[in-house]
Image 1 (cartoon, chains in turn green, purple):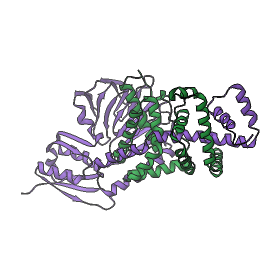
Image 2 (spheres, rainbow over the protein chains, first blue to last red):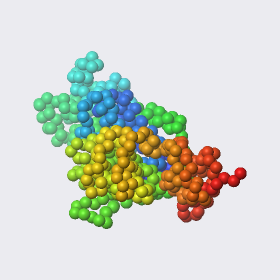
Image 3 (spheres, one colour):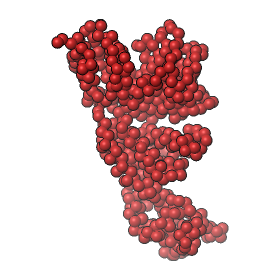
Image 4 (cartoon, rainbow over the protein chains, first blue to last red):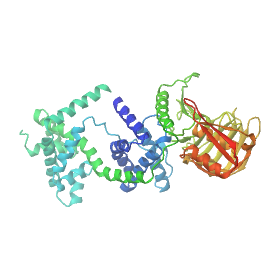
Length: 193
Length: 334
């Protein structure tokens, strides 16, 4: 945990110094999670994209005038939170929104194991599109087998077998080595905490 | 139980996605005794956890977003603020200040209260969020202190210098800014307060909302409405007047507007923002009047050169190593 805020801090210093690559690092690291969170609250994928992108642009434009008193991550989070809040207030979706009422952003566990995610990403690409779509609906959109079946006009049984095949394939693709390594790192993280 | 049997995988997937019947669940739990099955199950759990992240990453169109940001950035190239030396100084000071904040304990620790303090040096500006979401812009040579109990039992901050606040509404915890001469009490609003110790005057400008001004003892003085400014000179009464707020808050967007402002006052402000000393060869030069807008991200010599075109003055710039540079303003000789 400590190493990561130190890394973020180094990244921030580079950003202040005008290093665009550092901004990209910060962007690639947190943009997806911030977007996902903003999307859940605004129920609009495109609006969420704009809101979060704007925050990164603002961060860059004001980098020499910004005082980071906790961490870059918290600062970004606050920026996005404020943007989401004013958007919700403007669009009158919620009557009175309090800062504390907004749910926390679910930040992923820091990926110590980049190797694993890269391998997973690669393996996922090998799965045929239709089968991948079914998996995505189950994992990302959290739909039930029945809901997926209805949406794609196939049988629930088909959904079941396709999902099972995907997991079987992925498990076999991701070599033993990857999963063991991931396992060990998970354990390591737990003992530090 | 063959590790290739699809039925095993159907049970594993079904369990993870909560699609199993009760009897299927019993089957699953029995199978966990088999090492192979267990390994496959645990592996699939991890894959499932990671998949969510991979999908979010993919659907967020991270690369598209970055391309968009990159093109926006290259369009608006931000010019560096003042000179290289002060730019690095800013980075170092910000770093030091942030560690200072983490480790800081105020010298006067009263009961359970410890304070955190943010200091913005001359030549810098700051922007931050307080724990309740309130946004604060700090101008050069300003200090903001807040207790560790902020947003718990109270929302009180202590300011010396100049700041613009955009306060998060919270009816149960009024936000109070304490400065030497005045206290500003709000429920949720946007206002500017200029309370530099060296100036003999404290000014509060209200943009939006409602504020109550108290004296340093906490006694109510007056309420402000949007578009009003309250000024208090030391030992004098508070004076309220209607003004155009934009003129007083444009500093936070990097520009300052002057309307018939004396050279003496402008010089004071420039000293703060650029961290220079300005001397006048002739006291009378201080009363020259200027109107206009200055962009803060221009180096100071450009700003002074612009002023030279408007009045019979010329300036001399002296670089002092390891100290603040000096600008001397003289009468122009023709």
